[in-house]
Length: 420
Ligand code: PMP
Image 1 (cartoon, rainbow, N blue to C red):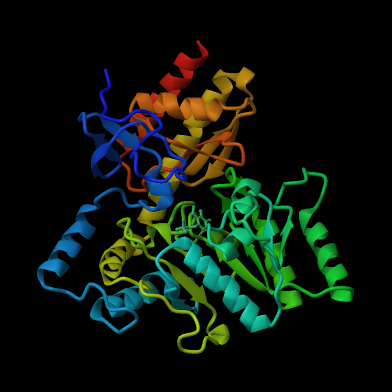
Image 2 (cartoon, rainbow, N blue to C red; image 1 turned 180 degrees about the vertical axis):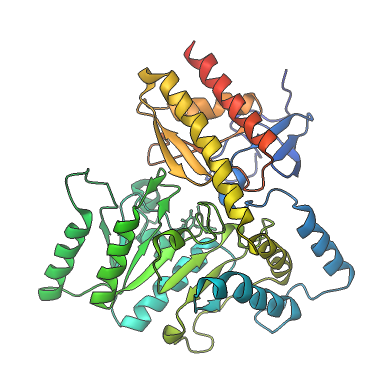
């Protein structure tokens, strides 16, 4: 019997109500792909801080580096002053991530979180092009500050802005209008119209795989087509890799698989590797036109995050980690397909790639019900999609195969007990 000092909907009485998660317990400990609550109950974590914990909770190598750094009185906060921790991160990021991929980008620290990276990308694209409109896509999620919200598709979240969100246009994402309609042609005709009557956009911002929106994947030809459209119209291509970057889809950058070169790339969540807030905006050197002080902030690049982030890069020195992610992804995929086949009456649809996978269900509330049941059985899983219709699995990329199988077994048992 599970005991907790919390009732289901009141996590902390003095906390505002805007948080959406209502996992009814109080967590006290976390390690790798597991969490424990105050009653000592163990949970397998298939949520991984919404992608901020790709290397697991309290990754031992990063923890060790951090403790060592603090013990030596390393600089913790320094605004944008040069530090050894920052230098090491930049050196290693270039050496391990950018150079082997033939990517020539300058690194900007836009602020502590994903939405800061998106804001800086939108501002820069507008400044570079002298244009104001930005195209986002249906079901997109880019963050909660006003600029990011303006390119986010979710109506409920947009309404929360309380002001009109101008200078953005929403276009159908790959597959949104069904297989018969070519969404790139649709976009092209919109741009042709604006070429004659209105003005072209400064940027197009896209997620290669929409995490919050419901695990919708853009095809490789579609992403290449999008890049082509941007090039031929002088539009900045921004890839928001905040959730899908840092290996979630199997490669460090999600767009690598399409072989495209965005003008601007947004990274956050797992870039620090340890759950410490950190964000990067990567920009092509030619468009580095910021004036000093034009975009600043107190916590732009934190030294403690640099320490763990530099350690996290070690995972990417060989192909092994990528291969491991793909292998685990196939395991998840098999289990999900098995469940969908076992209960055809639920009309589940398996989605995703790498270690971002899930099942979309038609019946209202079903995904949430599954998530609640799984939680009671010791598996943490979130839902995504406009109506929370998708059960989403995103375990740490470093999860042991045994824990992965255990989590999948809990999921299968929950489905079984629910349907029987
Ligand atoms: N972009 C994407 C694709 C995201 O998934 C998120 C967060 N879920 C954000 C931006 C915003 O990041 P943050 O919550 O750190 O501001």
